[in-house]
Length: 517
Ligand code: AMP
Ligand code: MG
Image (cartoon, rainbow, N blue to C red; front, top):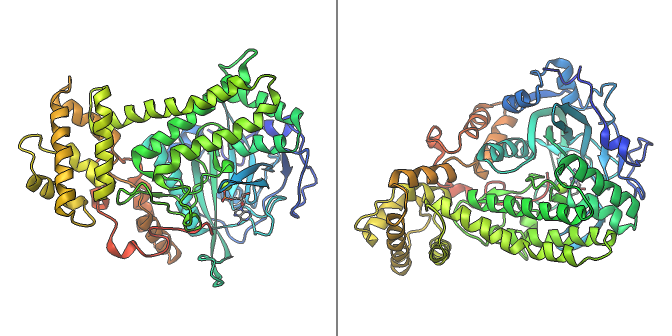
């Protein structure tokens, strides 16, 4: 075990690539550079609000003492750290946005482990070369969201970056939450997040767009060598891209399993390791609406709606393919691998749905039933999480509309009309028949369902409430949520297994969110 302050950090990324070493924070383009060195801007009074004990144990990090909290607040940089902001580009809402970069995230260093290392990054640590006109800070409400949700996703079994700590800064930050000219001060915070690497598709798009092919090749080689160690040989770039395709498809399928909507799937928010990254205006689905986007900025086109995530991931993979194509003599194999996404996605998706529904395996005929179930759920829009929980206990005998109505009562936001109820009943009759054909017992099937359908999800209104209470000095709900996320498949936290309350459906921050964070 080491403390954050006595650990010897490595700085492999900084040592491997050209970077801007001036340390200056004025906004600028940094052609030829993959990062800019920058020291976090000190804060008034860092106070530890959240600490992820399990993660710390996994990484061998001792519980933080005063000097460690200074590190987590950006007030202390130890001698072996070479903090930097990464330079990346990206496509935002379908448009090329050019250089973006870490405008408020600063990597302190890499935490060496016996089998690789983990990047430790402070989000909200002050301006960098990539902050443009923004302040490099983060508010408590968005930091609570990132801190709790990254860990919640981990315990749900969804690939994700992790969050080690949440620190309030003692400084206020000015934010125009609704982008309507009513800016107000809010308490600031910093999340220390960790991942093997925070490299995104956008890190590869950056040198490609600048025709810096040597940097691009070096970055790809480095990434493969460190994070895709099994890939070697002549065709390694294409095979590596194939692995990114696979991991991305798998990540999206996991989002769909638990009802997660990312909300800002820009190519700079797509991890090269297939991890969920950048927790902004995300949400879980309450009512099952594939057309739901939690991001107010996304409202006109709903590009990032729940049901569009699979095709947007494909679109982003296309951006990545475009970025690496100039390195290949023959781009046809790359195109083929990209085209393969659809098949990988659907196969993984139906296997996942089979487990969600408690099937022994997915047969061809099941696909029609799965489609029907989704269609009727879209129409009735029950609470997704509660519906699947109730489905686990669904009596398979004598299914009729009366039974369906009472059994699923607690999941309905609006009482289904007669036509929808009869559609739902029809589908559930077919479902009951299908379950009876399983080559596994009813209890084995229920076991599979329990392992694949979360019972506790971190709903936006709970996050909103916990942040509001924290600001007032009450950490009870925050602490409860910090525990509840650890056992999402158990009934331990059933007090939270209720539909989104009526008041939360219109309240900002409880259903939809802006990007202001
Ligand atoms: P996001 O939508 O959070 O992925 O951010 C898009 C870009 O804006 C990234 O380059 C961020 O680093 C940058 N950014 C977002 N918020 C801030 C902020 N408060 N200060 C500086 N840069 C920011
Ligand atoms: Mg981002």
